[in-house]
Amino acid sequence: MSTPANQSAPLSINGTSSSVAESTRAAQRVASQKFPSDQLKPHIAKLLNSRLIGQAYKARPSGLTKELADSVKAKMLGFKYIVQIQLLENLGQGGRADMACHWEEGDTVTQEMFTNETMICSVTCLAIRAS
Image (tube, rainbow, N blue to C red; front, top):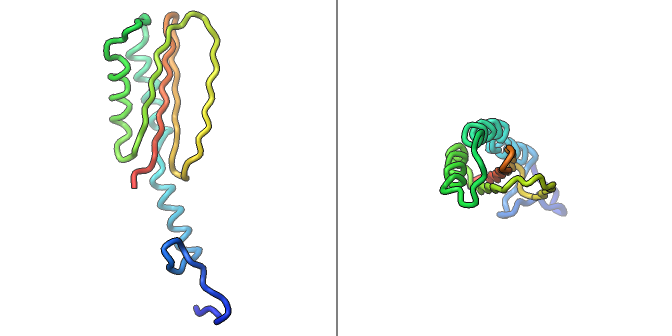
């Protein structure tokens, strides 16, 4: 396919010609590289229930948060990740949290919470596609 002399072909960032087919293939690669957060969320819920049911809040949890984070990180191989675990004392207080993140397509966030009579645990996982 040739372009008339007075029109230039569409260029990509590196200066080469681009096409709809190339864009479609790139979008399919991104979709296939998206982190499967729907598989991580049940793992986190099961982990929190197995480790925290019957536990009482301690001001110094002696490695509990690191143990939880390591177990979650083991499921996130192949991606750059951030795992944030907040362990709070439950005194009947109300709370509200929200998050807004704008990334590339394929990056994702997963959150799971656990509460009992003495503690509130929030796990937030951010998965960013590794290049």
